[in-house]
Length: 365
Image (tube, rainbow, N blue to C red; front, side, top):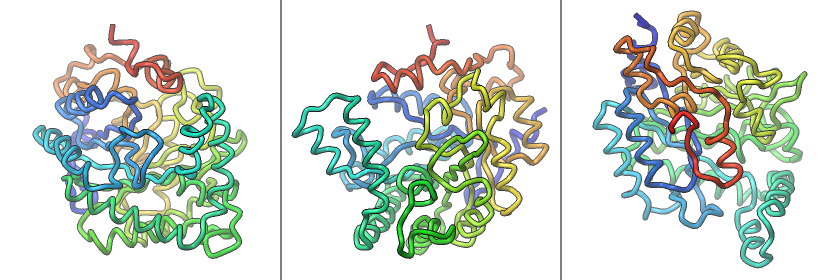
């Protein structure tokens, strides 16, 4: 039963024991609890964990571990070693902030502005940052990605995911990107930075699989601002495929309302289970590489049928695995009735993070 879910699959030269991935997930500032959760999800049987939100440069959060420096390699190595004990592979999601970190940091230090004031100024900076970066600064950003990828290999990661939202999403988007040089204007120019980063990492790490988180903007209704529009996906996918991407992690674009990028059970447009699978289905038209689908996925029967119907090659779950880290083992053992199914209420996960409260799940009393 569920042969599609439990058949192994290869991404590049990396073999996953099944097709269930823990999606990159922000889980707050309590690193000890976060690591415990990640290890428990590995114990629970998933094929791959993507460790989310690892910056290639310094961030606003002083105590956050990044791959911008060598000093954090040993920290990440402890995580990768633990996860691999359970036959689980692990990837790191590398991103560059979509705002000027030094500028926004100075607001914290010098002006003592409120959290809401900082958010407003940060949002304003996102619009200008992409267009004001010099060619030398862009070269530095590419170099930061490559150096972070090399540190990721040293830390024991099996795969690298390039976060195609954040700064790369701004460069990709005709809404944010108003540059007049070789990085702006045409679709081919707007994907250029992502393409160059992928190619540079491939030169340095030819055997390291590269996954690309591809955010897609929807229109009518308009959802998301970063990333390519649906009609531009054809070009983006073909360019990145040729550059060396081994798999695509397909989702809705960010730079929008959090309710759209992490939709609740009652979202007016992103309804029901598999609400982003139309996007992964579209991407599969333009590549033979592995395509990951997601979007409020929770029930094994639905996921099995999605894989069977070629809507995705693998699937990523986040909130469902936060709710029940043993989902995979329970499905494998025929204990579906024991699964704690996510309610997609966002109360103690997404909303908690937005309001600076403790991360968790309402199902865990």
